[in-house]
Image 1: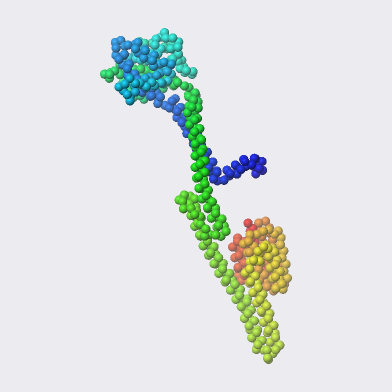
Image 2: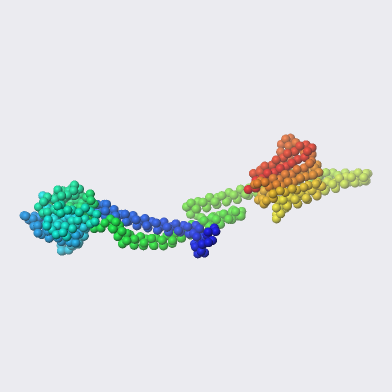
Length: 529
């Protein structure tokens, strides 16, 4: 965080923005779109490289162009002897500039003198042979051709150059001068093969090789043409040129348009998703405040819609559970109050009525005894009043409000000591804040223990210890009264059962130790988590 504060305010604002889910999703959409565009560009470049330097598509295209462009050579080969001059002139016309250029008749206007020039690779060899495979015309035209003509047969840069001893001359058979791969295409052409896949390919040096038959109007094979070409550009230069002139502009356009589309659609999609999540968060806030009638409104069929429906079901179940527990707690408290009133106040009121009745019967005959009965009735009334005060105090958990457990416990013990005339001392160590349910449970345990002491123990002093140790809080209430045998009572009576249930409901433990004639100690342990 300290490093973030050192950054300029604009950069800090940008970083905070991209912490939000909406902008994270927008950025993810944008980056994925741009990355997809770059991957497509790379795939396109690789595909162009494969088509031009690895596949048979270019050689087949050359063979197809030759098939369409050499139909006019048949009459020259049908003459006896073949018209070498006309064939040589044709070779000169198609190898100008060192590249093979074939004029292909336009199929859309076959009756007109209309041709389309098609430029293929750089020439290493172009030879026209008769039906026996003997060279009739070849580039260079003669063995004494000038050096510039010989250069046409030489591959650019890294390809192996044909020496002048390997120059093919008219009147010589062509097949012995060819590699095995090239000879296969040449032989297929002389046999009248018309499948370009069988007539073209690449030789061991990577040259483009094609050979097609020359067919007379009668359908007779009168010769063939064989070409060996070098692709007009190096692979590295081709890839560089394709990347600069084709792939880069297209990729740049795709990246820019993809980034714009990614930001736009990513923002819109993320906005809808974040809006739905906010609705769930708002419903969760209401549930945390006990407003379980609030439902998350999401009717979609995707995972978020399913989550909303599950959470709504959970809220309904929690509402029902809370209502059931509240009803059970209310019923339990009513039963407890009924028992308390029956066991204490009712008995005291009944005894008071008996004493008042006895006093009324003796008031004329024995006024002294009548006064004693009235004094006893008065004592019973005070006891009943004290019992009612204790019950009312137990019904008012507001004693904890704004005080904390330690202060509320001191006030409660002080009031109880004054009413019961039993000396009491409160000791608190390591006080720390406690959750309200734990405070209420410990406060009720202390009240119940003090009530039992005033009713049954006959104690003269009481000690109350409230101690925090680590993540545990302990409440101990000890007296010096008459005690009892815990085994004989089996943990029942004297409110012990209700105290144990309160503590165990919160994951705690209640220990009771007592010996007849030596007092009693009640200890509650709760985890402060």
